[in-house]
Length: 318
Length: 259
Image (cartoon, rainbow over all chains, first blue to last red; front, top):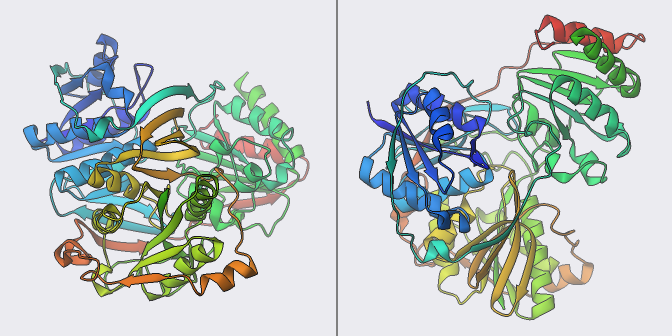
């Protein structure tokens, strides 16, 4: 079986869940090899990647690699593609993952597919496009298939292996070092899971009515261990920070459970959440198009229904 | 400073979009064409930079005949000149080919910055700005929520899932902007009238000095094997709140093993 390269996404040295999903997916396509760019690849990280089946971990560990955005990871991968001739390269469908994929495609004369929700053993990628209204199967026909995969597309499944660590050194091109990162501020951690990775997302829209109103949305999210999302109407109004916007011009999420509160369901919003596995809707307007997507819906005032739901969940969970 | 701002005409954000049966490309006829929303922010940011530092803004668009409307819109917002890449040769180009065409056209014209919206609302790939930077060997300053120019240096705030980082480079550079960087202006009546007199170069592949073999559907390195409309969701249960709505949802969630 050929190698499948997976670019590791990490936060402070901890491997992100999406990477474990990608390693799980890579096992169906060939032999998974994780690629770590930057410092921090310690024994714990190796063990985590091994637990999900990484046979090899390539480590390009020089600290300078993370002083420049995007280009260094693309050059590390391009070097490994040239040396190892992998059957495919998988990356997370994040801003960084997609841009690395784009540069890698140019460098290696390869086709690129983004936002796959499934990849079959013969490397046919399934995408859900136009806000989830159309399902497309595509294939890369030139070079090494480079595919970015959305979070939550596959469930991470352990398959313990003891990975071989291979340290690689890369001489960056001048072009890759032209942009320098001079400062970083992490997203303020609110203790909730990351929106695009969360198994459950609780969202609020125009019906929430104010920034204070989001208190009931957050309380419900916390009772479920969920992430909080918002419709564009809510973020445009300044009731909730823009980084939590779900929709065509915001994040695309595909959680196990999506609870939409006070959201009418314009195509702008549906485009970002339509592929959620189970959808629950609370809205006072029975004509709201979001009800067309609902597995379960309640027509009513969210300020009555949502706190009652939060209480009931807390009660049931004891 | 001289800025090229790349804009794309897309089906109206609010319209249902579909693929054409013949070649599995976007059906651009079935919906009204509008300027990609994020590109409006790119045009606005370019105009603001030139207003502050002097220079000119050239709008560049690759797309069918009617994409000329989108070029015209950018001109009516205040851009100085336009380049429209149009012709059968471009139809079906993938991101790799699009980045080739744009990099070739903007590369040799003495621009300090090439500015993009960070994503189009139809393809939603977010890869073309990075690809153009790679091809040109220019600094990549993408996903900017803030852009500052001082002398020959550009500094942006890059906003991604992981937070915000400050990224600096010397020009020339490729910039992409995210929503919220600014409030795009509406074209004024005066702007609309002035736009009619502004120069637009209309170039086909040969006119732009491009290699036909690297463009269009035949040069696309990924192909759509098949597509289908998502089967409509089976209708769910919708109930009116009788004072027990929250409890009923909890019951549903328990049934589905979420709690």
